[in-house]
Image 1 (cartoon, rainbow, N blue to C red):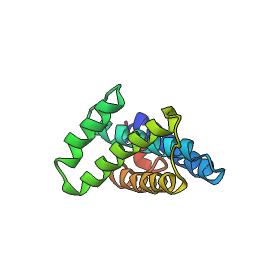
Image 2 (image 1 turned 180 degrees about the vertical axis):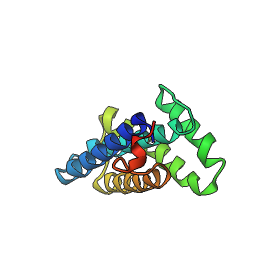
Image 3 (image 1 turned 90 degrees about the vertical axis):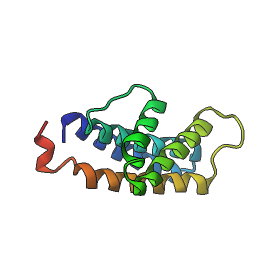
Length: 134
């Protein structure tokens, strides 16, 4: 795992922790947004493992789909999590309507937690000895 991947995994975990805290405080829009960012950082870390890097969210999501979901059908679920997560983030961050419900935010947090588990299984954890390798 490279130093950049390790930093992204740590940032993703912090984002997931923040999502849980925000959910507990009943800030559901912001909880969903943080859950999406956890997944986004993890997708970036996994793509870096394939020597791929992008500056736009849409490019990261599309590349994740091409690189992982098309190659491995089991990964399609995680690609869907990214797509739905971005939609929730856009609602939570930009819409002035009713926003994200408690259950919708909880679902995004659950998906982000699964994404963390996936990334750790593919990349290792930031505390692994392999994290020292670049």
